[in-house]
Length: 288
Ligand SMILES: C[S@@+](CC[C@H](N)C(=O)[O-])C[C@H]1O[C@@H](n2cnc3c(N)ncnc32)[C@H](O)[C@@H]1O
Image (cartoon, rainbow, N blue to C red; front, side):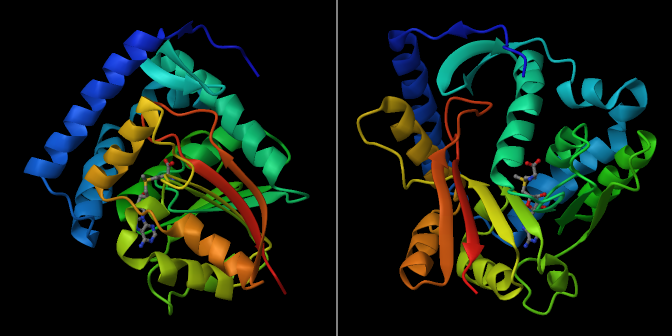
């Protein structure tokens, strides 16, 4: 994995940036009062980001999948790299993230040779994994048709259509015809369940009932945040201001107490593209 070019952020600068971040989140709570309904999620992702990505087709201008994933943005930002907040150019961060995510998933996936990502969008994470020959199948399911279509076009453009595939699922629907695909699969969610705060229990129930081999959840969480670190306070208020889910990990802990799941790993994420919201990793298996 490449060591990125990055400058550590001084404590006073971090405290100031956290204060600005908190002020923005408080403003969002006061003036926007976001309620993360299906329509809001559709506007942000299907008609929003994924719609834009599909209409721009920027992969057509990029000679390699890696250059498409890293992008062209040379602006500096604060990001979390190997557990530390640093100043880093966006493209340096995304170059580092490709390796960091690939290593993380590979380390957590046991003996699996395929990954099924739920809420995969256009497959950014799956394409990041695709350089590792270990993965014979990388499959993305999502509710957003524009994400699915963009993912299919990207896979086909880079000749990956046999290994990286996409289809539709609604994780809130107990009768969704794709749920049986989860059986025996190694599942990844990456900031997906965050978008479904109104149905976390149902989504976990649908995943558990399908009997996957293993689940790797990487989602925002308040569970491991402290009240003494200004950055953690910024994350907590940001999560509240965006109305992201906050129940998932408490629910998994409860299921573990009931001996319905076995939790294999709990850890805070070592990388994140911003000051706030660095996510929590839970890896678990159904108890059979
Ligand atoms: C924040 S994006 C993350 C996308 C991807 N995991 C990534 O890291 O690039 C959340 C994704 O969850 C999807 N999603 C939201 N509700 C869903 C549902 N009920 N069923 C399946 N996917 C859903 C959205 O369409 C969106 O693509």
